[in-house]
Structures are given as C-alpha cells and as structure tokens.
Image 1 (cartoon, each protein chain N blue to C red):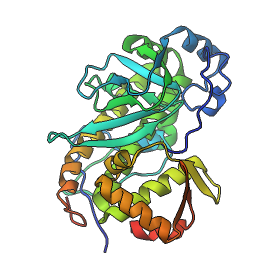
Image 2: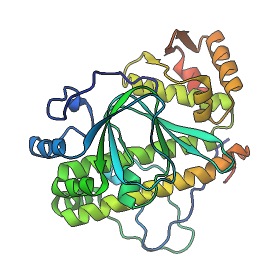
Image 3: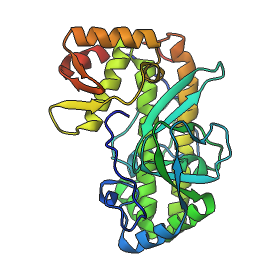
Length: 92
Length: 237
C-alpha cells in the first residue's frame, strides 16, 4: 500500500525547493497545484550563477533557505504528534 | 551517530588536518584565513548543552571534534532525537539566518570541541565569501533533507520494525558510503535509538535481538554490521 504525507500548502510569494536546488538537486517532495496556479521557474544554473555573482541576493536566498528549514522543523513537530497517534498510511 | 570517526582535536582551522574531509570548513585559502579569525574554540564535556530549543539564536556552532545529539521535545515532554551531528556539521545555522529561536536542543554525547561564532560575525563572514555562503547553503540543504527524512521515517513507515530498519540502514550508508559492508559503531543507548525511531526502549531491545537472531544484523560490542540490507529494506516498505 502506498502511503502519503501531506506537508502543507504553499502560497503566493513563497519559494519552494530552494534547498533541493542549492543542494543535491533532487526534489524532496511532490508539488501539486490544488487551485489554478502561476509559477515562476528559476532554472538551477541561473540560481547558482546569481548566488555566486550577487552577494546581497545570496544573503537573501540563504535567509529564505533558512526559513524553509525552520518551516520543515515546524512541520516535523506537527507531523510527529500525528505519527505518534498511529495515523500511518493515511493522508496526514 | 553511529559511524562517525573520532579524531584528535585540531588547534586551529588553518592547520586542521581534517578540514578537507569536512563540508563547511573546506574553504579557499583566503576565506580560511578569515574563518580562522572569527569565533572561539570551546570544549564541552559529555552531557553539556550547547543550546536549547526556544533559546534565542545568538551563535552558530561548527563541530571540530566529537558528537552532538540534536533533539526536539514535544509539548507532552517526549524527546525525539533528530540526528547525531559530527565533525564539520554546522549547528544553529537555520535559526540564526532565519532570525528565529533555536528549533532544537544540542547536547554533547561525548567530549567535543566546537567553534562558536557570534551571529553577526558569521553573517558578515558569509557576505564576504561566496564559497562560505555556498557551503552554508549546502549545510542548510542537508539539514532540510535530514528533517524530511526523519518526518518520512516516522510518518510513513507503518511499523516500529520498519522505522528501526530504516535508521540502521541510514547509519550503515553514512558510515560506509558506497561500500558493500555496512558496519558502524553504535554510540547510542537503546533509549536514544527509541527516541529516534519513535518507539519504546523495550521495543528497540526486542527488535535488535530479533534482527540478530534472524541474521539481519551482527553485533559485536559497540560495533554493528548490517548483514542483510535487502531484508531490512523490505521492512521499511
């Protein structure tokens, strides 16, 4: 049986998968539109080049990445509570 | 974790013989000279807390030597160990850069030496050196993957056996990347392993005995070898 864990919604203005793009390049989760959505795609190479060339942008990206990690910690603690309630194998 | 090799404590960053093996501190000569000037080296005894969950994040910590337990406590007081950080790992980075309180607690599980760098000093250093920023980004990405991996292990594996099997496989892979034999040193107690696998100490003891009886693993003192990784892998499905 395939199990599925819903991590939460992403809203306008948020950057997603920055960690994957600046890390090993592999996506960590599946992103699925639940409403009609417009996205700006930043190719990995352009992102890396911008990271190298613009110190101010670099610091902003690092801060955004840090916030993404913080949100992941928050999501982890919420899901942990659900997991300890033995709701495995369901949409959480 | 399990698997980290202990080394002699380096005296400074420039002469550190382990630097090339470590992701964050493996800097260009120019950045390294600058990096050596910031922060202070601090020694911590086993059991010392470097920072606690919800503390204001004022410093970034880079482990030079030793191992540190990273944990989080739920509202009902249950502790979950997220990872065991080792030499070269950077702690407190996400909280410092996101300008939030520490999300986790860091506690030395053996005597360790940690380079402690004040928040602003570290941010200024990153803004001066692109290579350091890239390494910080990779460190954050690694931290992010660890959190996701933990969440998946706890939420998506339906059994305690599956979660424990996943943990052992991860440790085996980290200790011997790319090698067929997965052997590592188990530095954690059964209670601590239970805190990582989201189960009880009794269950960990029972399952490890079961795994050993079934020849899935071999335990000799503090050394553990994964004998049948495929069988453990099937448990995690």
